[in-house]
Image (cartoon, rainbow, N blue to C red; front, top):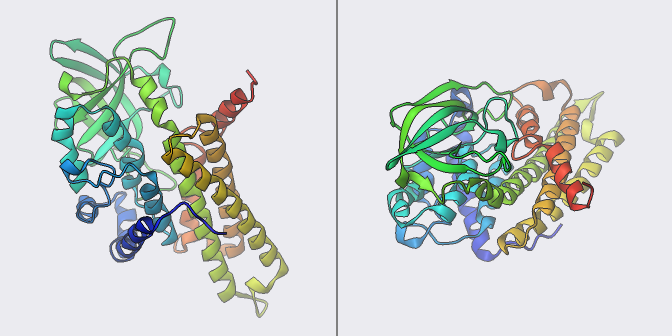
Length: 383
């Protein structure tokens, strides 16, 4: 179906990204999967082409374009080529908004040039063992001591933690028995700070090119000048960016589902069973036709949400609806596509196997499907 959310400038950026992905990502992707991470050099290459700094101010080398559609194009073009951009998506879609919204002038001068050119990599440390989606229940704490905070605690499931130069740590700086959400603060821990340790590299069933770590903090002295925003205000900051995080997942889910269909059409046309192309069987045609209809519906939904996000009109409940619907569509489509590959779909040499394992986390991170349903139900007045 026709899409009308992108301008000529967006499409020019798409051409740049498509060429970059084909030349720099696709040939190296298997090696990166085996290593469990993307190399730092690829961030520098993207920085040279202006792919990391389009939202950052021009005075620091960015383009000054606070337009999420550029983020979406990066995801769409990666999935079109049956790869992902690993922790690039997390840096641009999840972490960068905190720096853009809450970094003061001095912090901007220190960090923004490196974020633009790819020499500074980031991670955000929210999740703790035993807390999951309950951010208000986190135990990692920091105590003010003069011009520093003394940080102690542990975080898990940290995307990009292996190579991160800057880790935005959500920690508790005060406790209010009447309000569990109060007292959370964002501190930026820098690589090399004494007491900051990287733990295990966690083995995942999918998203192999995206490193996921455990991090620990033992009496880490973090300067007050490394605090993002106001002390105790972090819960509100986290909520402010959740809509974009959830739309980011939805954009990737639809793009991945679309790529799964394209790969399956190509495979079933070439593959024969009983002397006949698999694509000629009525079941194959009907399955792919039904999946195509679902993906087009999901695409229309996510495109509307992207426009609303850019315009500052996207409600949190609508972001939850989009994430819930699009990730469930992705799950159904990738599963049915793998089925049409038959036994070969279970072999990791075929990209459908990777799409299948990568897709599973979409219904978990940025808020589980169950959390999305809770938000939607509340919006319907069901309390």
